Amino acid sequence: MASPGAVLVSEWTKIKTVRSTVVTLLVAFVVTVGLGAVICLVTNSQWNSMSDHDKLTFDPTSTSFSGIYLGQLALIVFAVLVVGNEYSSGMIRVTLAAVPQRASLLLAKTAVVLALVLPVALVTSFTTFFLGQALLGEHGTSMGDRNVLRAVLGMALYMTFIAVLSLGVGFMLRKPVLSLGLLMPFFFLISPILSAVPKVKTVARYFPDRAGTRMSQVVAGSDIPYGPVVAFFVCLAWAAACLIGGYLLFKRRDA
Amino acid sequence: MIEVHELTKRYGGTLAVDGLSFQVPQGVVTGFLGPNGAGKSTTMRMMLDLDRPTSGRVTIDGKHYNQLSEPLKYIGALLEAKAVHPGRTAYNHLLWLAQSNRIPASRVDEVLGLVGLREVARRRSGGFSLGMGQRLGIAAAMLGDPQIMMFDEPVNGLDPEGILWIRNLMKSLAEEGRTVFVSSHLMSEMALTADHLVVIGQGSHGFVRIRTPQREALLDALADAGLIAVPTVDGGFEVMDGDPAAIGDLARDRGIALHELSPQRASLEEAFLQMTSDSVEYRTGSEQPAQPRKGN
Image 1 (cartoon, each protein chain N blue to C red):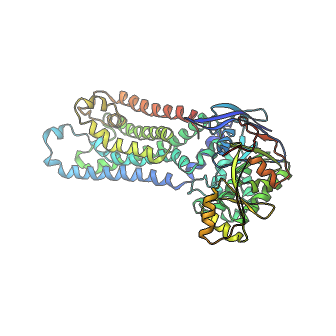
Image 2: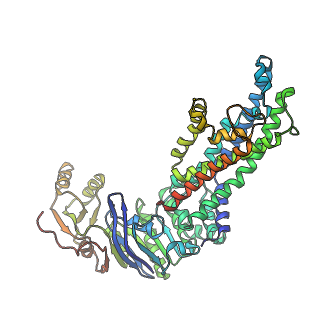
Image 3: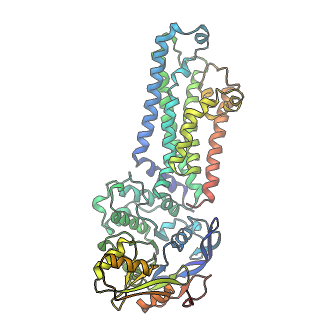
């Protein structure tokens, strides 16, 4: 058996020696914070034209997180490339010749992704929250308000789950083009569209991005019938299912 | 010692490797000869536990590959050139590989020196030529100072200087007492490098014998047509799997005179034996010993 510690060190070296790691994580941060800030700014300036209902159900916390809609795409690219790059270059065969224990390899990659994404997600969600609230001015909220800290942490956890889910899909589909071709439209188009279709939306509200939205809300929206704790487990289940599916295929397939 | 026992690989309806058994003995260069598509690469991937055999097994000193602790210290393999992330430097590529098998980082500098890549170690491997990529792959294979080394078609696409370097490297590895297992579809290459031979593929092969006074012109014409010509001891050529009519037409179009153009049938072993006095000891399990084909 290869030593798990050695595999971990090796995967850490891999991830920090390619440019795509810094680029994708930086883009995730900048886009999430930047787009969130723009939306907060616009909301603040349009406040007087909003309906009374919108004003009453206004959630300053989740409004500041609006940028994740685009920012998550960069996280997906990051996680997919961690495994997809090895398949597109043929390097996976070099890796597996050095580390034939496929479970150890998958766990080491997952650990390295978690170790990078979790801190980035925390910095992103706190930054976008504070900047968003500052730009919302008098309509903003503060960290001390009820459920706000939970929602900010929920945002960070959602970003982490998205990365793990994408890593699992990367292991399943191997080629980055396939993985990205599935994940990007799903999060950017398909899930939002299905969530608006009658009947279908009763299923679609258990999609990971809907559950993620629920985790990062302070004011519950009318379309999601479960609370933030259930939402956490829905996200966890998606991430775990994708990772386990990835492992089952990875274990028996030819490299 | 590597032992391959009744190894079979099936992809859907096609049989890529059919009941292959052989041994790779210690301390010599064993050639793995067969035409393209005969399953050489598939066999090598199964030997490294990268592809899962449909049936059969491979053992290395009695163990399955995934039972080796730190396998790079047992076997170093070069399967394909440039199986590296193009954005990572040569040094960092070897560094992660060394770390995965607890090989000291100082060894990375050592192997970079051995293959002559020290000057470009801090450059991204994406800009490497095929020859440099091949050297990086060989550095990776040598990283764990393994007793067994495997090379899949190592001279493919290399310039003459690179080919010579690889040949000398394999000889010196064997002189150091290492086991070298190297595949090729070129009989001439095997004749130069291998002490021992494993032949894979169909028992009988067609080839075309050609003699011409315009050797260079014909070689160029054949190369343009994608055919591989092997020079024979009597000054002619043999073209593997060539069609005599097409070769005759090709020669006429280029104005090349042919003094002989004769289709032959022989096993790869017979053809090989014409070129070298080395003996062929092992062959694939399923085929009958080659007989000159009757009729057609």
